[in-house]
Length: 178
Image (cartoon, rainbow, N blue to C red; front, side):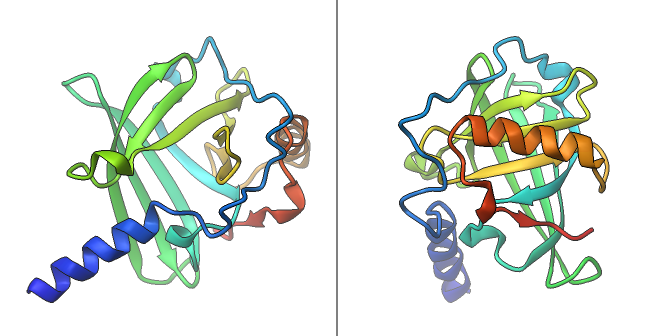
């Protein structure tokens, strides 16, 4: 039992660190957020369409993220991944997020480790709240999300354009199979 707890701690610490410490973004370019983000419309289920490689999602397919409003004012986060393929074993990670500014949240998957918080900035959301681009200033992470498991070419191209405009090297994105 103690070994499992220790293994979970080590896994959580590695999950907090990205694979590429340098990041996927030219940080000399400005990054912006959705300053008028309607959090009520943003909440709900999102499908991961593309992501920059990271340790905690290695081998994940059919990834979804569900955001909900908690009674204490925080945001509940439930990420689900299927290992290896869209029909592979399910892994779930739960977290709490706090709004720290317009379009800016911090997410913590390890609540008893206060330094394990990560930035989660909503960089773009379309008018219908059907596609979103999420990242953070260092460019170590980034995602394209949609309300369904597929995204039209036009919406995908718009998301790519947003990322490129903020200095992201989108050639490094991985597409997620659903």
